[in-house]
Amino acid sequence: MVADLISYAYAASVTLGGVVGYVKAGSVPSLGAGLLFGSLLTYGAYQLSENPNNYYLTLGTSTALGGLMGMRYIKSGKFMPPGFIAVLSLAMVLRLGVRAAGLTATKQE
Image (tube, rainbow, N blue to C red; front, side, top):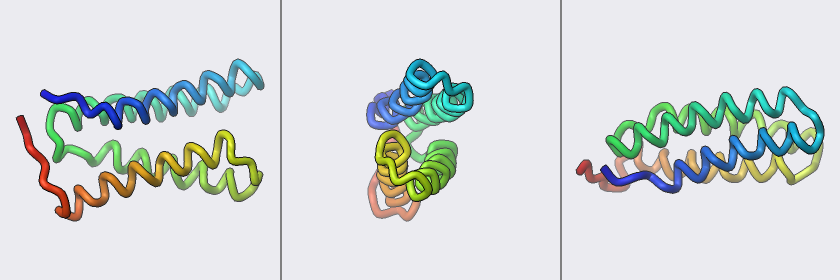
């Protein structure tokens, strides 16, 4: 098993963002969303580490989170944190979308 460090880093960023939102602004919704999406992404990273072709949870969660945060960015015009998370989510969607389209070879060890 080779750990998918990119997915784990993305999951940690989302979780940490929710915690920071709670600490700085007292935002319970930020904490809840960060922990929920971060947990789903952490489990998805574990699945990707076990089998690189098992990308569905991470792809779906990244798509949903990217859409939500992209809308928040457009509405607020603030890059941090919604724009940043939207960009990270888009990068993950592209990374996993390429895999889903069969444009990259994945090895299962």
